[in-house]
Length: 204
Image (cartoon, rainbow, N blue to C red):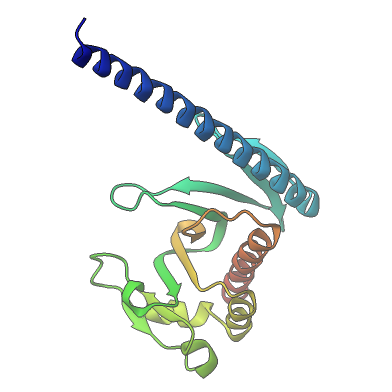
């Protein structure tokens, strides 16, 4: 065996060895992350008298609890297509049958729904709110009625500056494009979503 072949074999073995170590580290980190999520969801389950469950074919847990006799699901999902980024979401049955999207964020350049030309940026005529958040929606009147002054206050107080609400038939999903890993983050997202639900009930 000449020196060139020997070097190639050594390089190949080195690559396999490094790849094995990298895979081991990634698995350990993912397990640690999953364990932290389970612990976090356990705390939230105690607060809401709920249960921590697991989806089939998913490494992450999800939280299920009741709010005014309606099931609320808090979990993690991954986007599809170009938007594969992970996000945290709260799902609840909506008392209003509606098909609408509302996106609130700090940057006007991303306050859109991709190629959805029906989406429109609006102002809520609250200077403090309008100066910090851009609102984009495909149903202006509905968005104005839903994002009440009390909900605006919550969003500003919690510093939830990038959130998407999607109303699809009788479902409401509130999502933040990041993996929340703090109890306060989950509590704030859940609180805002339930406030939206209460507002829908009030208007219904």
